[in-house]
Amino acid sequence: MTNVPDDLLYTETHEWVRREGDRGRVGISDHAQSELTDVVYVELPKMDRQANAKEAIAVVESVKAASDIYAPVKGTVVEVNKALEADPGLINREPYGQGWIFVLKLDNADDLKQLKDAAAYRTQIGS
Amino acid sequence: MPVQYTSIVEEHQAVRNAVGIFDISHMGQLVIEGSGAREWLNGMLTNNIHKLDVGTGQYTFLLNDSAGIIDDLIVYRIGEQSFLLVVNAARTEEDFAWMQKHLPAHVKLDNRSADFGGVAIQGPRLLELFHALFGKDMHPPPRNAIADLPFDGTKVSVARTGYTGEDGVEIFFPATDAVNFWNAALENGKPFGIKPCGLGARDTLRQEMCYPLNGSDLSPERNPIEAGLGFFVDLTKPNFIGRDVLLKTKKNGPREKLVPFRMKEQGPPPRAHYAVFANGERIGEVTSGTISPSLNWGIGMAYVSAAHAKIGAQIDIEIRGRKFPATIEKKPLYKK
Image (cartoon, helix red, strand yellow):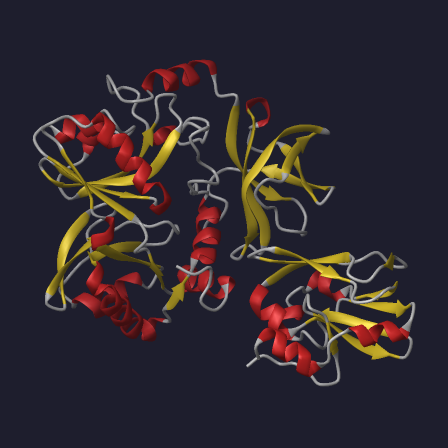
């Protein structure tokens, strides 16, 4: 049974966002990591990069395939998870914890309203 | 066969350290028999069939007139003048049509693919599982041999072959027995840590051994000498389809060669179709690549221009616009 925490927001492309004041921490959902399995490489976004909503800014590669990771909303990259460079498997083991990928400073916190809540994301993935 | 049952890496490790089972029912089986079958088939395939005793097999190629690879396959001599060809699923029809076109009147060619199911059982604990399945007094045939063995009131064909680099067997049985055999193997394999394995693990296992995959590393545009597989071509045979072209390739040297490589640094996995560079000049293209689960490191195979195809040569693999250094290596890329 795939885990979809109630306190997070989600995108159609399987990113999750945790709101932290005017920032949003971003990772990929438990469902996404279990579909990808065996993450072997993460290409992190550049610090201070500005991204539009739905812009590909990171890559998660499993043995199976390379997958783009999209900025859920418009913002600026203010933190990246360097721990993933040495241990990309964190995404498989702790998708909502140590496996986070980057933090965006949100251009407009209201943009988060366009994302899905846990119930809507559960419906999307048939969970 | 699915890409994975649980995880490519877990399935890969099961085969390297315990035992894994693959459903290979999709593979094609062509049966050729009749007086003169042996001589005729020797003119169709690159390896020398005269080296095969009844009950043994060899890896070989079926080539087109320009020596391009239609298929790579294993031919078993199952009788004085009868042969079983185990071929790639996606090529079965084409193999059949090509052979049919050249078939003499006294030789019979049958596509039996729909009649057979099959599994590959591979890994260091193969023998333990084999005895659990077939009985303590039964033994699998020696490497590259094939034998009919009794199983559960019926008969199955067991070949000591595989695509993983581990000790292994490939077993063929009537398609109607497939589910029964699969379940029996999984049940009996439990004490040995058996895992069902998918296409993903098959691909990482074969890449560590530098076994080519048809459609990726081999194609009708490539010949066996370019692919570095001249060992399975007997140019001393007086005649076989593609021989003239191969003699020329051998004399002049191939334009490009398939080489194994290993990344120099930890980084993204190399993948098929990435461009290969040397000193800033484009010299070829990756045909297979992955992170090797055994080495936890990027490996792959690429066709590069012959001048650069030297063991130890430094190359760069372009991944999303950035160049990552790699070294051309010797086969295999993984050794126990």
